[in-house]
Length: 248
Image (cartoon, rainbow, N blue to C red):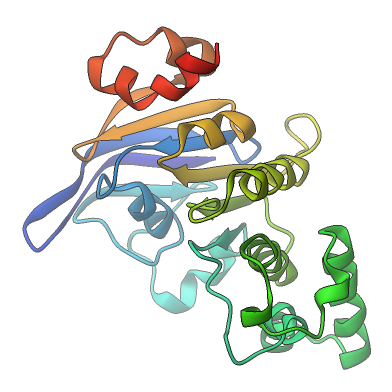
């Protein structure tokens, strides 16, 4: 279980999150929606202990992580993997080296075992043929797939976090990335790997998520399923979801 209890955070006296409370089970598929600067990515950073709230508590699997030292956060972080916006690949490393990075840093696998693991992940994501290429030689979609492979290499996460996973991609490529995200969360609760996707593209969120949290001015303005999202009467939220209404 992931719990935010009355979490507030400000940067340079500007409130980013204001008394935010919600809980999610690891097997849920959740989309965090909202415009730019509404605190979406901040929620992921807080969840991983990469930022600390000014007030409130963040409980991961029954443990309050807000007061933990950096050295104590590893166990909690291993419950997640994260795919950062734009992929954030190491430009100076090949696809093989990018995916192998965390395996070399944090595992005791031999080089032969690492090579096998890397190829297995790239094969699963349909990009094994790119193993010797550099990031600059990859299309945007392939870069995202490599980033997903790298995020999965270091651990067996209970939940995968996606920060604007389709930003900058053409519609066909975005569609394929959404399909992949959904495939990586196959199965039925409580056994499947869950996901939280942070995005301002509600159409992409609708393809992968079952629960939708809408942030406005640092607070949760909506939390519900697709049926309730489509029926929401809030004017700002309806403007935000206009694309979905056109698809009806």
